[in-house]
Length: 470
Image 1 (cartoon, rainbow, N blue to C red):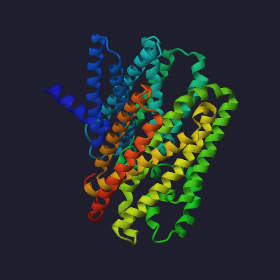
Image 2: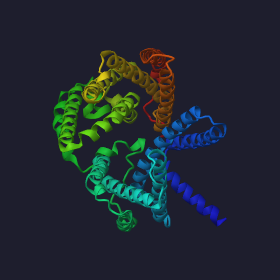
Image 3: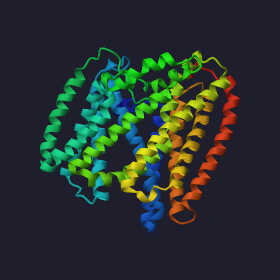
Image 4: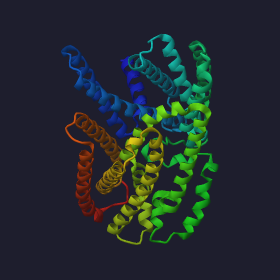
């Protein structure tokens, strides 16, 4: 009975740390189901000597499990930061020690899986030394990430990226013993554990990686200097806003204004080109080209599948305040918000295509054809316009439930991944051309968007801004 109670306590704490929201839970269950199917298909495929469909199943499992793992690891760090200030949990005996143990176990499992991937994919030796090295690196990265979340959340991921670059450039070539890394990691772990177990926050810390707390990312950051260009622009924008357009500023912040959005993109694009030029001048041009061959397709796919996700979360969080200042009817609010969304999407799409086109000029010049640019732009517009209609309809039907939005977003991503896999299969087999497949996808998305728009218009008159259960 005691073993059962201990297991139940750890399981509930694990759920709170890594699958706190309903959409995390369903993604976790989906990853478990796909894992069972992948293991079964691998065993059967090995016995029957069938490899093609087995590789497809394993590939789908890798994508689904990677999505859940990435989101769960981010959520875990946010929950670890939130736990000491949580009134419901912080008084439970030994809850921090148990959370720290779960954190340690998660990092250990990640190190084992990463070492196994190195063995199967890179043909590296599967040794205890390689596992120790991977565990030490994961520990360094995790602690740096947690401390960055504590003091300057805006740059937490960027700080880990810089740590990885500095490690690969200055420490890795020294060929230091993995056991020295392990000893340093243990010392850092002991110091971090001592601080975290005794840390008493002065205020509540929200997990910025939960959908309902996404706005905390800006409020929790102490790096206000990084937002100086936006802050300088904001007063002028607020003064020039008319009552008819005030809802756009409340809905999307300063980036709801087209001029400020263009200026932000110009600043980001200039900094990106400057940083990449410096990297090339330092002699890392070859490595950068190798990375670009992977980064460019991933960037294009990520923008295609998630260009509107930030707008949709802002919509769910702020549409009630926007409606309070909007002078028109609900139907007019739909048209005005849709127009604002498409304008923001067009601005983002223009700068994404410009930056990726510049990168493709050096890596994939054969794809810099007008037909591919036009097809990609039409596909992005069609997919995200259909998603906007779906999100609006979902808000009307669920009274703005963030859990419903999270579940819908994850399942939409799963459907997109499945359809992309099917499309890649039929194109690579020569059954259909890529141009014809893209045109068919664009036509289907526009047709689905028109149908969803009809449903959204019918649901709009009954739209409630009271917000349902989140």
